[in-house]
Length: 242
Image 1 (cartoon, rainbow, N blue to C red):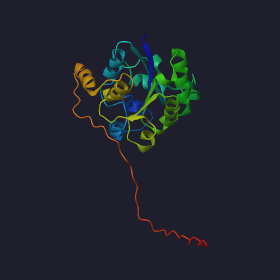
Image 2: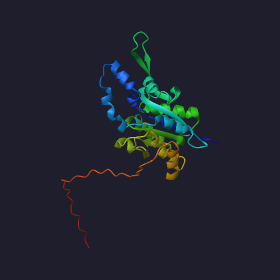
Image 3: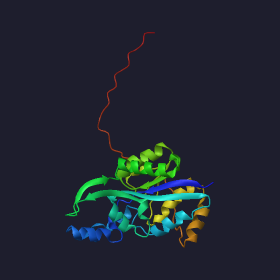
Image 4: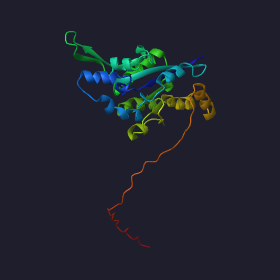
């Protein structure tokens, strides 16, 4: 029997991918967009390389396992579809949908907002339609809008993966992966879901022409220490009569 998993990812920064953001920014008179988003590759999943390879690898990851990959993002549906064209099918993308005025082309109203708690609604609809249990959900995110859905997934023993080192998200996610390649997100999936050891994981990467040069597993303690200027007065304890 094939084990089914729902793997959902947040791509809030798709505006920086495939020149979609450049075209949109020029239309609204916002110039110099490439320079402004140059640093985004250091803190999000998109723009890190191997996105198409990542999606393809999921289809052939292991015999007896099926991963249903979907994108849930607060970005406009049309922009995400353009950014991920040829990588993720449109029916696997759930962004914010608008109703437009036919005469002016302006936004009239919001049909669906896939942000914050709205992501939980989309995730639960997908889970129910696929007939997948809560503990077979894998969610990846990088920002504050992912915290509600990560807490929801954690509550039911699913796997949450942070792809940013921001403290507010790493404290919630069960695993954190920092890399310049999207394929890196497979590592916690292979370890936690398929129970693969590091040697087998390295062989998988090698089969796709990739080499794991560095793989540092760390537990980080974040401490804030300062001198105390407050004096605590302690009252003398009353003496007891013999």
